[in-house]
Image 1 (cartoon, rainbow over the protein chains, first blue to last red):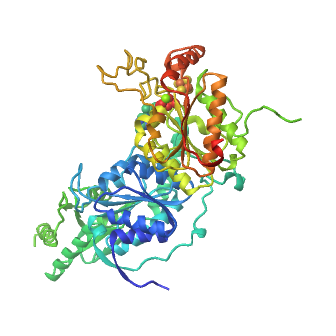
Image 2: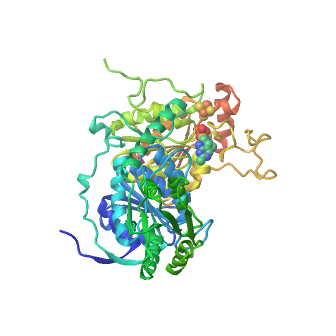
Image 3: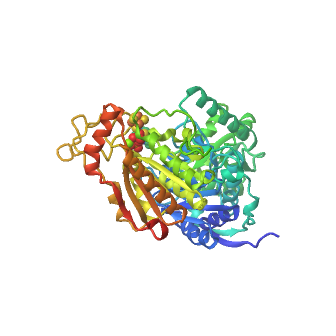
Length: 355
Length: 253
Ligand SMILES: Cc1ncc(C[n+]2csc(CCOP(=O)(O)OP(=O)(O)O)c2C)c(N)n1
Ligand code: SF4
Ligand SMILES: [Mg+2]
């Protein structure tokens, strides 16, 4: 039976979805604009007899997640941009050790301490492997409180299935706003995927010993391991590129935007429509794997693009890579915590279309 | 025929990569012997640190997790919270514990995390080739202290007595310091390890055994010289014994 819709703050909905997904260990460190999430977990993990620790730093928190995930538990941490920078070492190790875990980034503006208001300036860091080494991991970008809950829930499954970290990349707006949400069902912990590679209970299970590690000092072997991981990445890229699109067929110009920026792009699309101007919207849901096939098809069909971001232009590079010189690409962005308005985006549409 | 003394089951029967005279191998053996005596091999997990003992997972015959440099106490926290009935051994060097991982050890200890840290203090960075460690003695030479550690004029700070530092924290229940420079100290060190592991299995709180250990290679000495150097220089500054013991129950015996 589907649950009733309830009004929830994005940060709280993420926390509740994680608990329902079977997260048994949460480790976090306070930072705005995701503090409600840590507080939600503090109360609700304890109420559910699960593990919550307010760690001494984001570095410690991600490594607690690393340890918990190594035992096969569904483990998670959340933070915002400066804290995510500190977690990158741990994320790199988790990728190197093929550990599933979930990281939520409720983005704020940077660089440095920057500000505490919404931003999308961590796109490069999230999608390019923000730590050292050759790696990628899932990056899921919600546009609403509902999707923040759904993608957090799904992140645990994706991480487990593909044995890699999954990041939910939200921003301060998604984290702070309240919307109606229907929460997913609570998972039965005994039915979660088995993890034969995890540490613990070795004697009982009578299995060979397990090592969760990323070290390999033999270049030939390490190259083979990384290459095998990249074959997994190729499978993910072939099957899991996800996006939503609107009004594409009628339009020559396609807006490309994710998360909060996609809501603004949608508003601009409607303003244009009211004036009899058709523009399309392509909203990537997976930022890694990026929906490059769809962008490429649209370029092939002769569409042109306007990329809208809350940054100086980061995702636009993935659009350029997919388009590969075959179409005109424009960019409109605001940064520093400034959020583009629908009017600004609409003005840009008119400038481009000379209307 | 009963076997009175043999190779511990929890240690694989292979030769280690450690240099001749290195303390790590002896310490591995002590850990393995105690685990065998407690009959807990199938429920033991080690976090092997970044440092010479990164190789620990090659030698111990039980599960292992390898975290980033200095983050072993955080990872051990995650493991132990998920598997409270397991023996979690957080193996750390002095660079790992007292430099890059200072925050992690202090807070894990203060939270009273119920794992045991085995802190191998060889007063040097072994793996990276002999740089100054937080525990390097005053006047001791290192590649990054070529004229010897000078706390005042060169601003290199003072050697850190980790047991004494952690003793002030409410979460710490058992902090002992042993050494592996001679048979007597090896034997005592094993008793400390056993006490700490038993306390862990009773769920008593944070336990740590610091072990003064030779690094002949990076001290620039022959193995025999290195055990003498440890005796004459390290032990006077790093006092051996139980620095803190607030264990309840049977471990007090
Ligand atoms: C983040 C990071 N910084 C530096 C290093 C390089 N590094 C490897 S081992 C080590 C020092 C190890 O010294 P210690 O913890 O005393 O262990 P030992 O080798 O002496 O047993 C350093 C600095 C690293 N691997 N990772
Ligand atoms: S360098 Fe030192 S600590 Fe490392 S294996 Fe050799 S003797 Fe042991
Ligand atoms: Mg050392």
